Each structure stands twice: as C-alpha cells, then as structure tokens.
Length: 142
Image (cartoon, rainbow, N blue to C red):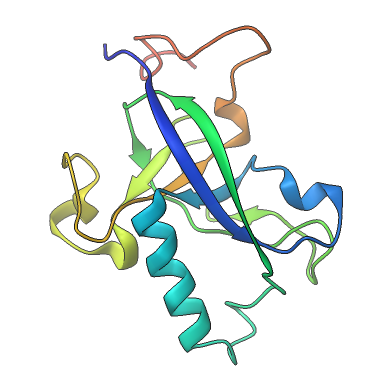
C-alpha cells in the first residue's frame, strides 16, 4: 500500500449557510484544477446546472490515500434547489480523482501530474474517524 499524502484542496462554493462548508460528498480540486473549474463556471454562468450561487473559495488541508477511485461528479448543497449533495454513483470510500474535463488517457487518474491540475471527489464513506488517518491498506478495506 501507499502512505497517505497531503492535499491542499480548494472549493468554489456558496456561502449561504454553515452546511455549505461541509466537504463530504463534494468535489474539490488542487489550485490549478479549481482555477480551471472557476474559469469554466464563469464562462458559462448562464447555465443553472453550473451556477449554485458560488461566491467563495475555501482551502482545506487534507490527508488522503493516493489509492484513487473513479471521480464522481457531485452537485448541490443543503440550501440549493434541489438540495444536495447528490453524487453520481461510484466507489463509496476511495477519493475519486481525474484531470479537469476528463482530459488525458484514463482521465490521468494515475498520472503524477496534469497541466490542468486535478479534481477530487470526497466520498462521505471514506472519511476517517476522529484521530485516525488513512492507512496504507485503504484501497483494500471496506
């Protein structure tokens, strides 16, 4: 197995209530990946699917297992219509990862880097309990 790695995660989100800061079952990104998302969102702001009253960018310092699963888009917040979050079905535990806009072979999930950065999906079922960190065997546990 692989040791956990640090991730500076960014998220462009609404700031209407305290629930908007919960990143379980949400999509986050590294700095380059969030910049790509923000540019896309601003270019196509008239599309209600993409605009959930995003007004804030928050940064979280996380420790994640680099045994990545498939990235799943998650949309919505508790105070949006329809209420969320709601994720495309997929692995309920492993952090999903892909290059923005599914760029590259296999969305570059296993690549060391991407010129557009990476998007991550944080499944609620993969969160470690308080005081614990991801193990080297995170990919095999369930």
